[in-house]
Length: 169
Image 1 (spheres, rainbow, N blue to C red):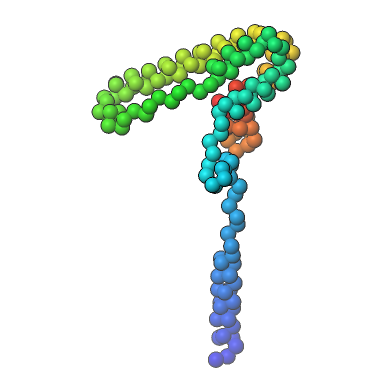
Image 2: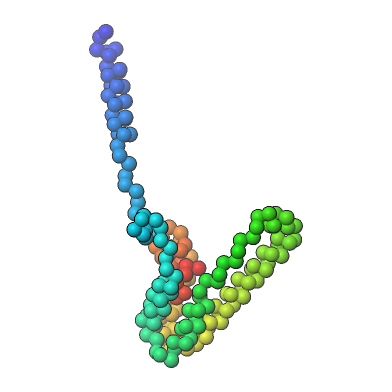
């Protein structure tokens, strides 16, 4: 066999060995976890009380609240607490409902959420009325506006940031 017939086979063999070696490289290390882990390596749920305390302290410091504004702050923060999640409906029960019954149940849930939202709006307006013009301006600067930088950018949930309530929405 002469060299011209052997060369393509030799080049092919070298390429095959090189491709196999590059494919056998170690994968990159896993990304850092987005949530803190406990000592056993399991995910920890954030402490809602600690988060609420940090949020309240942030508002006190950023707005430089006076002692007479504390009751309004407490009422404002209390309405921002998430409501207890209702028990999930049984799939069999939901499946047995007619379409109008499912729509009525959905309307009832929406009405409950709207009532909670109305309470938050009223508490926010009462708190805002207690603030001085300078404090109102600082509070307005904290409020989320629009969609911010979108889902991929900085600023918390969907780019809207935490805002004065500490929520992204």
